[in-house]
Length: 521
View (cartoon, rainbow, N blue to C red):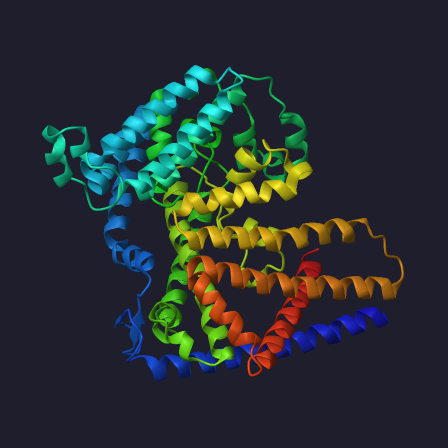
């Protein structure tokens, strides 16, 4: 009883502190945005309360500006595909042809003649997979081929047709509206997924379907969950060239994902998903609209990203720098949530369920593992399935994180700041892995022991959140040189009180996450 009373009082104090903290953050953010709006870059006339809108992030600006045409195009694609499936009772082979033709129209608009590069590389990959799938050299061949083109595409910036002869140089005038080698990063993941799923289909299956159905609430209800679709084997005819190309170029998921395995895609192009009912998909769309209104409100009143790209944050106090950094990370989270859920929404309408990205709020993650499972979640599932487990899984975890995050950095782009982000993340990951192994081995019975262990975990969570902010700001906002400035600002005599105040806030935030987790259980 005394314990419950103490926990209720602690929770009440933390909630009160959180309300005061966010009230001050909002107040200070408004003041900063108002005081510097004439100096930051990337502001445009907005539509809320006659305020300027922060569209300084190029990715968000392009997505937001193209929403009307994207929605019209995907709506038309959906009507055509659904009508043809219903009229002609199409299954995997028929629907793959339908979506392949639709997607080719879409890709030709995006990339013009550069679609030839995509088709050529994809065809070579298909041939190599079919040739080497049953050999011991398969993994080496598949990874060498895909990493080679992943890097080479960026080095040569998508190639020029003139390198194949001047008679082809005229095709460089028809390169479309979107650089093909940027989108090809996702195509690379799909080519590897197809390769391994076909490779594993040639082996004795290890997935126990009956055992899974007994333990899965979705499958027990008569529906089919994503994991079941991914892990069960497919018939040989599902690994055809047309289904393969359809998978690589499937229009709703082509630009940004979410990333779906070949097995799951081929199963659903055959028989549409039944996990989400139409009312569930409609509710999903409404939640997206609410999130869109939220980010519009945010960018009209808080110019976090504009501060970051204008370098004005270097003129601010240590606490104001924290506010900008924290705001940028929350903006990034909401931006990616909207982009990924938009494309997933149209995929769901068309009967293809992809894993959900951003299943958890960025402000409800107190360790690196849960953060990465909750950020680009579909990519995390892909990394676990095709890199982490083949490399040995938990047995070689300390080594695996270096391989995985280096690949993630190279996959994003060939930039030193991304490699610094990747290696910083690995460095921060090691203490967490060791801490988990130690605390997992400790058996605490006494009330004092449990209290001390909980406090230790809360402090560890605060350290992790601090490290996450540093790593993500280094990789995606200020770069390695900016991190040096941030560290010097916070470790200076005037910045130390701010640093300890922020750390204490993260400590209380971690304890609030503990309470949320306990309430869910």
